Image 1 (cartoon, rainbow, N blue to C red):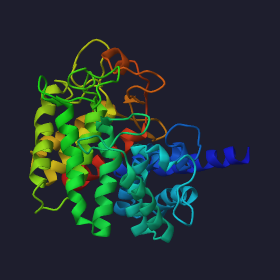
Image 2 (image 1 turned 120 degrees about the vertical axis):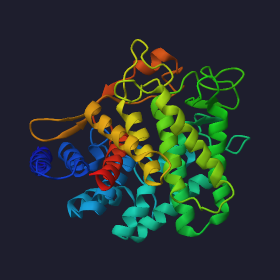
Image 3 (image 1 turned 180 degrees about the vertical axis):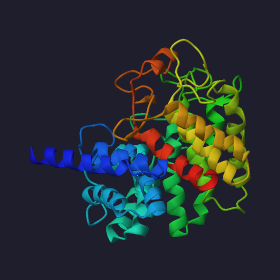
Length: 390
């Protein structure tokens, strides 16, 4: 009971903070999330269990971006508390993490450690970076050299997995001076793009099974049936972030830039004509039951804003996309708490649920508010918009 009362009291305090007049949207979103979830273990909506998961890690990364913008120590404390609780002094990760499962999702939360360790250095955080990198060194691969998604999904490359593994990989290479590994980073993006590309639409499908044995995979191409919005969102954000670190002079950089350019050029063709946002099933816009989905839209908008900052797309267009994202999906309640609506809660392929990745599957997965997978991209997009256009 005491913990419940403490959480309620903290929620009220953070809610009051979130109502401060004149604060930027990025900060108000973070304060709102901290009000709803006074401990970071509640961010993923799983009841507060301490788990090493990508959802929490990626949202906390965006919190650190906001902290660096505003300097509010309560935000840094909030992030540090979660990582401190789950990482032992020897750098091993506790809770549910098991390296032997080769789950590429479990690489993702370690990416935040590079920023956290710079802001609040701890020897165990550096050791944890090494501990997680060891998984990548032994991660099973397809014959083409791409990482498997996890042991229970053998021979499979999901676009999701590029975000789960590659930004951490790139940060580790940069921080440890392992320049010979940039070729492998490029290979991951190149294989995924080539094997999931759908020439009929110009989009990239959710996943590819090299063995072509999965029930969801096309017997000829090995591809899944559709382009799921968030899957391509994951890939696009991963490529956007990795290119921030990828050496300018590297001979494979141009190929990666061309992949990203192709994505950003084709996406407007599949957007909703009124809002310019994107659908849950990206390759079936306007189909019965399909809906405008906020997490993929936030990911795409973030990538456009980043590209505009580099001078690769029109800045006015990127800014207009953010305003549409805000108007379409963001809501504020009477207490000042900011929410992101229309989030697909989860989607995947295979597994115990025998998810076959057809149209009906995607449009019937649960929809929620404030999913961390969208919140992280939203916060980071808001920071760029505030810096460049307000």
